[in-house]
Image 1 (cartoon, rainbow over the protein chains, first blue to last red):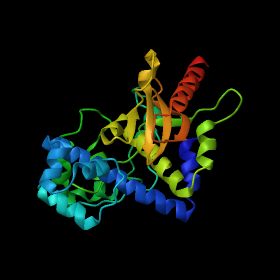
Image 2: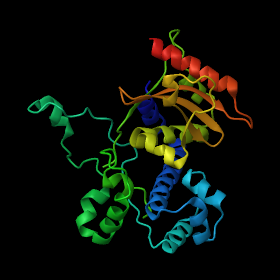
Image 3: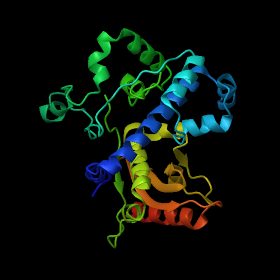
Image 4: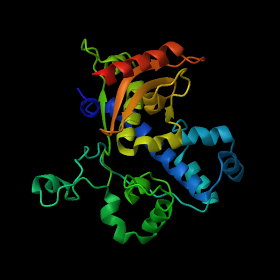
Length: 160
Length: 122
């Protein structure tokens, strides 16, 4: 069984799903914090001083090993002039799709149309939540100019 | 939109053994969830995970071969999964998993390399 199918099978177990969900939240927060720090051009030590925390704690947060309260996340982000935005997305995202590369080949491009069925809620609510969208886009500026990082990949982290 | 941007697979040896898949079964449910969560993030984020230190390049190798630069370890607590990034197929191949102790586990790293050479020779 391949890893994705293996995960899908294990997620049927509520106890496993709980552990998995907790870890995913920590990973998403870590990715967002790394992006925020990089955007500000600060080192872990500098950000720790700004937040009144230790550098090892920042390292732990960025590694997804810490388990801060939601209030603590909000407080830390406020000191950096950001705020927390939470979003939800399907537990198991869409599987890898083939790259579109043959114009006119319907069999290749057909499956790539976004029906919105599996999209995070934020995609559909974005127009109604201008402030959230602004915050998300501010972070998006930091990301490398790779097609691998659409804005959604950053904003779904939960903290901006 | 969240989606998997990379593929991954458990390496299957010529004798049919799948070292990482079998190793995962020896872990607790919480440990398995942690590792599989990191694997999911790897499918979504790829090498970006290096910025979070959840993915590290395996550097402590003597006499590095060219392909060794694509050898990484996925980190969850004290657990490590050695993975090879096959850039031509945009696929992460999980070769071996182990529990890290205080010192560098040379046997684990070297075994990981052997599995990589076995994979590349096929």
